[in-house]
Length: 170
Image (tube, rainbow, N blue to C red):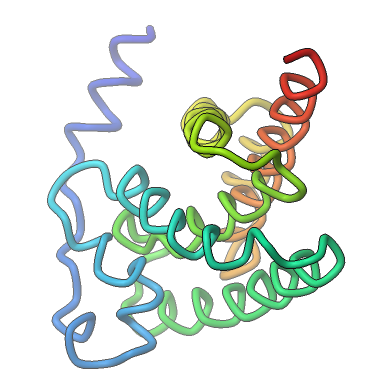
């Protein structure tokens, strides 16, 4: 059974990346600042693209970091909904603004250091790919921009909780 799930997920042709990604700044942002145009693992590349944004924001006080992250979440819901309607593809694999948002959530109040960025990255990718409940339910049942962003926000919350537990022990 697991082999069939793996085969179906990766044997389905990927929708074409719209040309507008290089012409329209909103598409460029929604497609992870261009990282979603890469031909493989766009979610991983999108998460990597989040690291420079995190590095800029990490020194902010926790309250300001959280306000900025919530504002990015709200703006991302709107943007992903708009782009999804325009390209007529729900949650295009190359549209990886949601991974950027999810990583920012993962890193809320994270300890400083390269080690913690790597751990946060790995934890977020784990929860984003694995999709334990309720992440899977949100991914399958919530539509539009809200669904695209919310499953990654929840994956980020899970990853953030595990990151903080690890930090507490180490």
